[in-house]
Image (cartoon, rainbow, N blue to C red; front, side, top):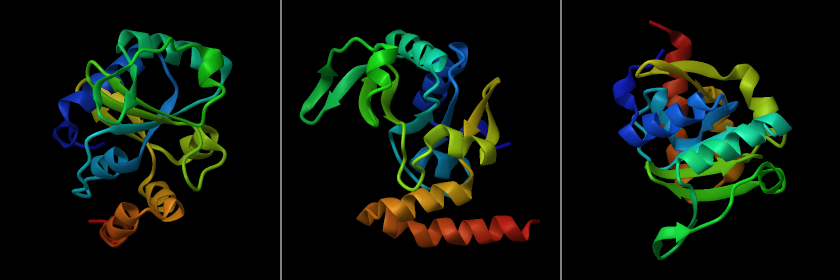
Length: 171
């Protein structure tokens, strides 16, 4: 369990809507690293949703409730789109802006071709406000950042790996 102060208001708000719509997902990326109390800073929340058809229907409804729009560089308002399960089933990544803040959907994160089904078994549960949020294990966050190989990910790896070693040693 991680203290809720490690999550920004927009992270809590977005996760609450996903929880309220019973969406199966795992928080990944920088927010996951931050929820492991690594000090990692990021703005947008990345989630890896389940591709199960009924989950995609619930996700589409949650995106409508969030007022999700496609995020486009240079356009702070984003582009309107109609989220629906069939569309979500046919994309690998969507960068969105919502009323609550930025949200990225990543169905097949770097290093995890199996997406949600591969990440969920090792996810931890973090209590934010008054609800539980599934968060990728720190090992999986590190693996994904290593696989992505972007400069910002490579730069973050030593700090994340050091934090993992501290976690493994325990109190």
